[in-house]
Image 1 (cartoon, rainbow, N blue to C red):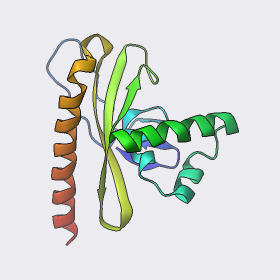
Image 2 (cartoon, rainbow, N blue to C red):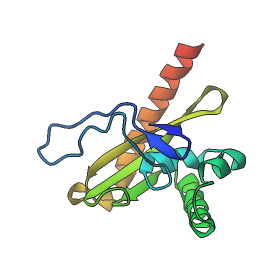
Image 3 (cartoon, rainbow, N blue to C red):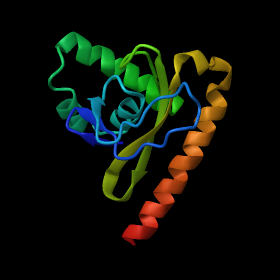
Image 4 (cartoon, rainbow, N blue to C red):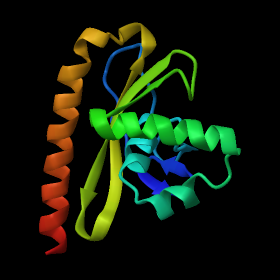
Length: 142
């Protein structure tokens, strides 16, 4: 995902082969402050850029989102538990590279498959994937 203003835009998605799954979202956008990848991207922005991304929110909502983003920064990941769609849960992490460029990746699943016991393993895999993407992007721009 990439941040476009206040939205997280899916640039590429990969679907699993399970019958019950989250479909292709390539090209779609969701409000960044509720999507897992969006929250992950927002969490690494500097204060000015974050202010711009949240400018359209009501003051109380903006304050709530800023508090939530502090937890995302501390934990290193974000969760969207049915905030964008009933029955969907996702975990997201940021991908950062040259000159402060930021993207995000997420693992989305039907809520019925989500298990808090598996979060740390999923987050570890997502961070490994993010580091591999950062390395590839850095090599491509060098």
